[in-house]
Length: 134
Picture 1 (tube, helix red, strand yellow):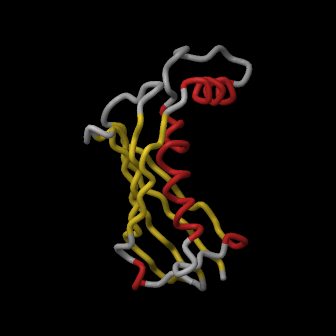
Picture 2 (cartoon, rainbow, N blue to C red):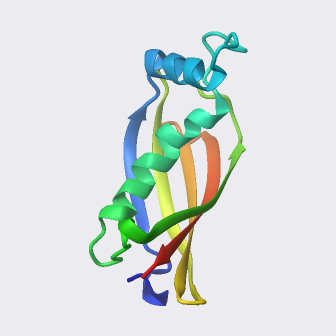
Picture 3 (cartoon, rainbow, N blue to C red):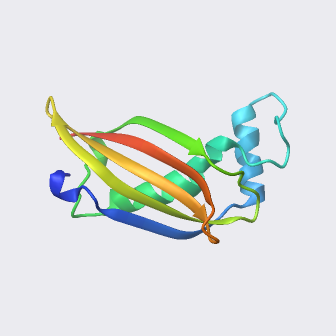
């Protein structure tokens, strides 16, 4: 179970390639029956693919942190965009556990994330709140 000793733990997922074809399929899926707003552009919500999933996946697999995935609630997420991401870009994603709080029998885990191009240019940052029940 996460506790305050895990605050400051960092995770790195280097070399996340932004694949244009996958991003296009993602854009089509979120557009539904409507036309894709900007064909060829990387949708902002695609940050979940190159930033959030690689970093959070490592936290979920960290046996020392011990998140109970069966009781996990995705409480919130937010992104801030610093530079456009293009098909073919390679980004490094990082996450850090910034808070662990126990409230009402649940554990609230705050995670800050950032993605940078390999030249050091920041492209996106974000925050997620994970709530673990039991």
